[in-house]
Length: 415
Image (cartoon, rainbow, N blue to C red):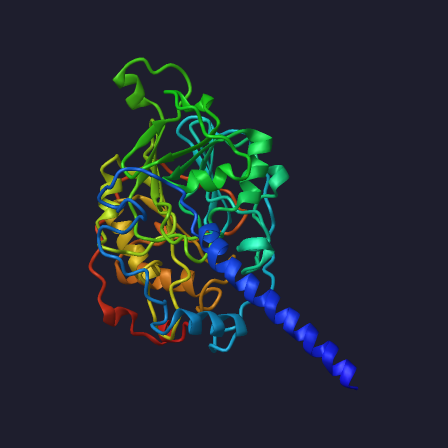
C-alpha cells in the first residue's frame, strides 16, 4: 500500500514539474506566437506604429453585451443566454452561374454570409469567400446552417477577390487556397492581411498597371487603388476608364488569435466600373462616425451596395454594437452612400449573435418602410438565386427615421 502511494506521489510530482515547465515555456513562447506582427510601416491617422485603430473613436473593445468578455463567451458557448432557437439546417438550391457577364449588365449571387459573386464588365468578383463548414480556427467555431449558394466546383473562373479583414468568417484560408490553386486570382485586402494569406502559400502580387495580369495577394491602405481592367492603360484618361478596386474606410477591428488584435487593417471597398455605376462592399463594420459611406460615394455613383445587417443583437432590444451595424444603421449607410440598390448580407449563415434567424431581413423591411423608401431598393435575396441589378439611377429621397414608426407589435415581437 505504502509503495503504491509512493508511486502515485512520484507520478503527481512529475506531472506538477512538467506543468510548471510547460507554463514557463508558455510564458516565453506563446505570446510571441499569438501576437503576430503582420505589418510594419509608418505611423498614420489609423496606425500607431504597432496596431491599427479607428480614427473616429474606438468603441469596439467593449464586450457586445456590456458585461465581461469572458462572461459573454461562456454564456454563448453554453447557450445560457436565452437566445431564440435557430434552424439546424436551411434548405438551399445552389445555382450554376454563367462563365462571364459582359458589358454593363450585372448579375449577383449570394453564396452566404458576406460571400457574394458579382459578375459584370467581364469580371468575376468574390467578396470575403468562405466555403468552409465552420468559421473558426482548427475546424472549431460557428457552423453553417446553409450550404453555399454556389458549389465551389460550379464557380466560374474568379478574377478578383476582396478580403475585408482577418476574422474567420471573412478570411477563410482554406477557401482562398482552393481559389488560388484553381484560378490564380488577384486578391486585394487591407494592410497586414496579406501576411496571413501568404501563409497559405499564396504569393504576393507583382504590381503592374493592368491587374488582370498580376495574380496573387496585394495589401492596400485606405484610399489606395489598383486598376484591374484588361488592355493597355498608357494615359491617365485610359486608366480612368478602366475598372479599379479602391480600399475605403469602415469601422471595425480584427484578430486571428488572442493577443494579435488590430495588427492588420480592416476596410470596405469600392469597385469602380466603366459604366452603370460602381460596386460597394462594406465588409464587416459598425457605424462609427457614419462619415465613411460618404467618403466611398465620392468615387462615383454606387449601383450596388453590399451592406451587413446581422450579428447586431447580444441582449434583448439591442439594435447595433460598435463593430456591427443592424438594419437601422444599415439603412443610414445606404442613404449616405446614395446607392440605387443594396443587398443585406452577413446574416443567416453562421450564428454569431442572439437575434433570431430571420430577424435581420424582417427588421430591415420595417426600417425601410419607416424611412419612406419604395420596396426592393435595399432588401435581402435568396441564397443561390442569381439577381440582375439595373444600372445606377438616383435613389429617391428618404425621410428621417421616426422611432415611433418602429414601435409596433410586429417589431416588438422580433427577437
